[in-house]
Structures are given as C-alpha cells and as structure tokens.
Image (cartoon, rainbow, N blue to C red):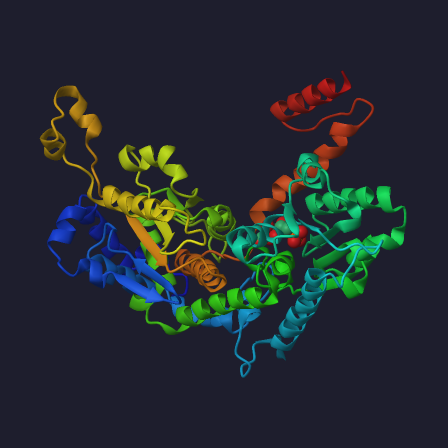
Amino acid sequence: MNNKPLTDTPEWRQLVRQASSMKHASMRELFAADASRASDLCLEACGLFLDYSKNLVDRQTMHQLLALAQTCEVHPAAERMFGGERINQTENRAVLHTALRERREDVSICVDGEDVLPAVREVLDQMGRFSDAVRSGDWVGHTGKRIRNIINIGIGGSDLGPAMAYEALKPYSQRDVQVQFVSNVDGTHLAEALLGLNPEETLFVVVSKTFTTQETMTNAQSAREWLLDTMEDEASVARHFVAVSTNKEAVSAFGIDPANMFVFWDWVGGRYSMCSAVGLTLMLAIGKENFGRMLDGFHAMDRHFMEAPYDQNMPVLLGLLGIWYNNFLGAQTHAVLPYDQYLARFAAHLQQMDMESNGKYVNEDGITVRWQTGPIIWGEPGTNGQHAFYQLIHQGTKLIPADFIGFCKSHHPMGDHHDKLLANFLAQTEALAFGKTRSEVEREGVQGPLVPHKVFMGNRPTNTILADQLTPEVLGSLTALYEHKVFVQGVIWQVFSFDQWGVELGKALASKILPELVAEDEVELSHDSSTNALIRRIRAARRS
Ligand code: G6Q
C-alpha cells in the first residue's frame, strides 16, 4: 500500500460509514434476520473452532474488513516474514519464529543466503538429549544427586511464553520435578523460589538472549552465590547452571560450560521465542515428544495462516475484528478469558506479545499515526472473573470485546465440575450478546426503581474459541493464532511489530538512579522535583 495514510483509503472510509450504522446494531436483530448467521460466521482450523457470530458485525462489515486486509497487503507482508526478509527494520533483523517450528524436512528458509533450518534442528536435538538426561536421572548434580528442582531465570520474552506453556501443559509434565520461573529483580521472587530447596538437587536454566539483562543477571548471580554457599566449589556451577542465549562470551564468563549452552538467533524476537531453546525449561518439564507436539500445533497454524483465503483465515479474521472495535467502534481494550485454569498465564503472555508488538505511535516511516494502534490486553480465567470484573463488561459504559476460550474435555473429569465450567462459559457469551430487556425484567415480576438495574443491554461482542482438549498441539495452534493476529494488525496499522524501543528509556533512567539511591554520601540529583524528592525520601528511610 506504500504507506498511504490508512485513513485515506476507500476501504477505511467505507468502514467509518459502516461503523456509524452498526454502532446501534442489535445482536438480537442480527441473529433474527439471518438464520444461518451462526453456521456461517464460524470457522474450524488446526483443532480450533472459532465462532465469531456474536460480534457487532453484519456480512457487509465482514466484507469491508476483508477488503481492508486486501488493500493493506497482509498476505504479501506475511510472505516477507516467513521468507526471512529483514522486516524488523529498526533492528535490521529477520523475523523467523515460524522457522523454529517448521516441521517439513523438504523446505529451506534462508537468511542472507544460508538455510537456518539445520541449526534449528541441531539445537532441538541438543535440547532433547539434555532433557532426556535430566528427566531420566542420567544428568546429576555436582555431588551425584538427581535433579529435583528446576528454576528458570529469565524475564519478559525469556519468561512469559515458557511459563505460560508450562502452566498450560502441566498434565503432561513430570511431576517429581518441581519447576519454577523466577523473573522479577525483586529478591523476594528468587528467595521464595529457593526456600527449602536443596542446592545439590537444583538446576538453574538462565535464559537471556543478550545475557546482559539487569534482572536476569542479578537473579543468576544470586542463585550462583546460593549454590556456592553450599557447594564451596566453583566447578559445581557447570553441573547446576545451563544457559540459553545468543551471547557465548558472557555465558562462559559466568562459568557455564559452553557445552551446556543452548543457542538461538537474532532473528528470534523475545516474545516470539518460546519454540526456540528459550523453551528448554518447558521441554525439561514435559519431555521432547510433547514439546514436539506443541511445535506441530504452532506449525499447523503457521500453514493455515499462509494458505487459507482471508475469509477462512482465523488470524486474519480475529485481527480484523479487533481492528473493527479498536478503530471504528472506540474500544480501548480487549479481554482474553480462558475457561481453563491451566491457561492462568495465557493473558499475561498475550499482553506482552500484543502490547509490546503493536503499542507504537509512529508508523514505519517514523510519522505519528492518526489512528489507534494496539489495544490494552487483559484477562483472567473464568469463572473467577465472573465474580469480579464481569459486572463492568455486562453493564459498564465501556465497550469491551472479549475472546472466550474453552475446551470440551477436561484433564480432570471430576464430578460435574467441567459441566458447570462449560455452562458458565456458554452462558456468559449468550448474556453478553443478547442481554435482558426491560420487558423481560418486568415479566419476571421486578417493578419500580429496581428495573433499570436489572436490565442488560446486550450487544457486547465476543469470539468463542473452542477446542476438544488443551493438548500440546492445541496450545501451539492457539498461541500461534494470536501471534499471527498481532502480525495482521501490525501490518494494517503500519507499525513495526517486532521492535520494542519503548522499554529503553526506563531502563536507562534506572541505571542513572541506581547509584544515586545507594551512594553513601549526599549526591546531587538532577531529575525533576518529584523524582528527586522520592529518591531523598527512600534514602532517608533506608538510613534510619
Ligand atoms: C521481548 C523483549 C523483552 C526481552 C526481555 C529479556 O520481545 O525483547 O521482553 O525478552 O527484555 O531479554 P533477554 O532475553 O535479552 O534477557
């Protein structure tokens, strides 16, 4: 599209007009007028069923949104990504997380003329050998004891994806090994994780692309000291620490045996890295076969995204629906509500994936965009949310599109728990879409001033994503679905989805403040008056 202002395209203008008529559309009427709405506005792919009929759209809206994807050249952009072009232009890098889960033997994916797939397979094999050794007890600690505790030390992209997937795939994990993820530089996180652990049975997986991240290196150093307090032998570090990184020198300098380093590449972005060696802790927990099944699921969604026409393409449809609410109906946020306790960390992972990718106000040419970009992503597992924030989704003044994610079968078919969970899952989207009118409330015998409080306006849009069970394959497909949805939106909004310069300023200021906080003597502070006063207050409190 040559970065023509998005808002000047005929497709955008048409959608603006469409929005003014659809703003007041009634989901009851949309369903009543179209008997095949539910059976048409749905789609099945890669083990996932998407019902998008409970959205504030009609067929014309969908048609117009699909035309927008066409004019914004979403598919050609995806081809550039999958083909290894340096689409992360501000960092001059290719973006090839899809190569990490390429399962076909007969293809090659080249960066600068070199096929990256042999190296991908080599690292996967190395991870497989290591996880087999740890899981079987062949890999022992410095004093010959079996590994019983694994602590992943990493933050952001080196934490959230694998932590989410570990939680999600717990039923597939080896239960006699305790796995924890430590990310926060707050010493409380590491201290609580180490509590009661025997260093002789503990393995640390330090995950850091750069191996310079303040939080991760601070936690890794403290973990090293904790180990050496007991072991009193520097050589023990090599048996109790392994590293996942792109920075070989820094890993060796830490004392980690380069043989126990698992590499990845600059073309793997942190928040898209869980299929790389960054997933080592996950593989240690669930084993290489289950990890491979998860990669199969990711790959299946990658193929679907590349091969399905726009109107049958799940990431494209979810991306377009998100744009509809974000850019045309004024929604500020998007809720992700999994009805599965195992997906407790799913929203947190999506939050980074989406908000770090598309939370940008300049376009690819560095010009401030005149349209809204990435939404605020948030969510909690159902049914917990129903007893907390759903009130606002049902009766608040804000439009909150939501994705409801559920599974037909539970890993724990205990009594009627799952029947109740699913009944709630279905009831919520029905209530949100169709609400309860004044006359329905009155027919139930409610009268007088109470009536308006019991009315539900409805027309609250939801997508329902349903799968048979939360398996490794399904988790892979589901996660890739959101990765590609974010990609579709980034292309349409014309932002660079694969950099994250917005995290830099805070980091730089923290490095400046750190010595000021800890200086023995009075130091001259050069911040604004608020920050200066807060620094002085903290210094004074810590001295007293
Ligand atoms: C993700 C970001 C960021 C990154 C962390 C950790 O896309 O780049 O969250 O993953 O800052 O970085 P390191 O892996 O280099 O420690």
